[in-house]
Length: 179
Image 1 (cartoon, rainbow, N blue to C red):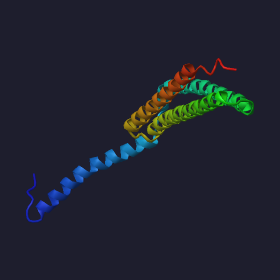
Image 2: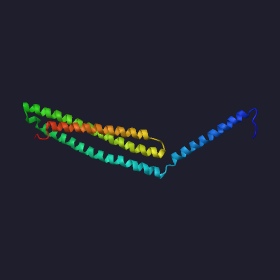
Image 3: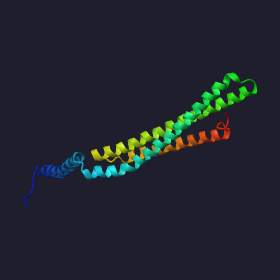
Image 4: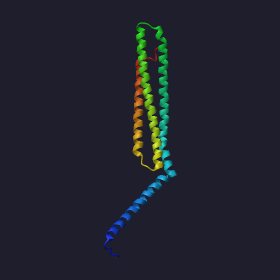
């Protein structure tokens, strides 16, 4: 074994630095290779994970369709009531005004419910997109995906609560039985 004298301590420090930076460089290079070299298995796994949100999107689309039908019924009923507006007088006028106000409230509730559910669908789409981007870039986006999914569920819950409130108003008022 050689004995290092004089500048030897600087040389040993330089050798130790080279020894420690070489594995670090190798790890960086390996990480970069992993980012670029995404295997078909990773993508297949993401596709399997994306199936559940896609079924959720189908359910959301069905819900939007049901809400849209409710909104169209409110609009149709409003047209009928507005058509009667010119031919009523006295106490009937107050009843018609009350019904129009309630139809306005129901329409707003359905509109906001549809907005919330559509927002939920958009957030679910972002969940699927973030999962694919995370797999392609080999970046851990689990927190982002989880956050987007939580926001999607909160938006869905809001939309369903508004929808339930509109149904409650419709049943309580009994406007569906008036002619």
